[in-house]
Image (cartoon, rainbow, N blue to C red; front, side, top):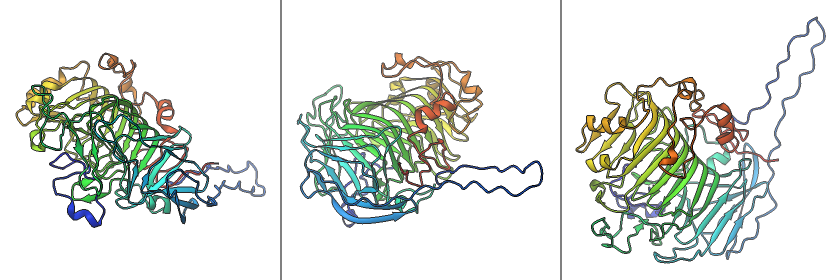
Length: 522
């Protein structure tokens, strides 16, 4: 993100945009059979062609399900696109009771404006007020600045399956108007919690020398009609469970440099589960973590227009098995890592210090991005078992001596980085010192010849590399014998193929079809 002040701005409606300060942030169709009719060996009548199977169009559900929240769902009529006609059930502004959004054939749920899961329960609270559960196969859509936020002390349980992921998308996607380069068509999903953050909204920060300078350090989602804080003291806080989800065409810009992304977490604790997540064509960042700390796995960030992964304000996160692929025309860094630094108002010695580790990853960048990975502000970076297709882009930039000192290490990482300054320093760190730190890890090669197939699948070159035992860095990371996210073509299908969607940027060979269309379940 390109903001100055590391504060989320997510709640501004289009009418209220004037209240958002300039330095605030918020943070081909389903394939058919191909039939080849070889000519008969001797002349004869032309055989009758085998008809290409067609998929039945969706017909609308009879009505909206009943939920416990007062006022319930609003029947907003129907919407028609290339895959059929659907009943539209509009979500309430706030879920006030434990509720479930059921999968109903021919039904879509609409997010209109800001939709809350519960209300903020407070910095020191320990209860879970409201849990919203979403069933596998559910599709939710929105437009403009609309988004959904699970407020602090509440939970979003959105667990799809490999066969039926939950899809969050745009109205244009439903109407068939989105293409492989569309983005910024709605807001996104926000999970807030009570785990520690470093960016205290009062401007008084905790440090190692004075860890209780601000005993109620919390960050604020500025610009919302209702105050929306996040953060607390419970590192194990649980903001819910988010498994097998696609988030498409998100990242609406509320004001210049003030955008939502596909998924934003703020103060989400280690009780939070995030697994098997696709961010597709998110304007601004693909995914952003503000503070908190948790382990997550199986991420695919495809086509983000800014950073693929943005991590800051004291987030302590381990990611295992990550694919990030930029579009050919847009995208900034794959990783932007901050703690943040002095220029972002919060001093680099503020605690908790951002600590971000990624294991078994494959990063594919476009030509012309500034660098693949940037770390600054004293944030701690650890990378293991990775493949970087960098093209003309510098692979690493390490800014500030505190960040260099905090480096966890880079091991078994290869990249086709440029011959001149593949690693750069900045803000008091020389290129030579940054390169020495990165290259000080084991079994790295930043002048590697990439042999990837289908963008992300290991070829013979990657298969010949020795893997690092990442389990020595974190017990969350398994011990594997390969680098990169995808060992072979079969692994792409096993890990990502069944629950993702296909595009010109990345073809997963998913049976669910293209990201520009909606799946139809039998």
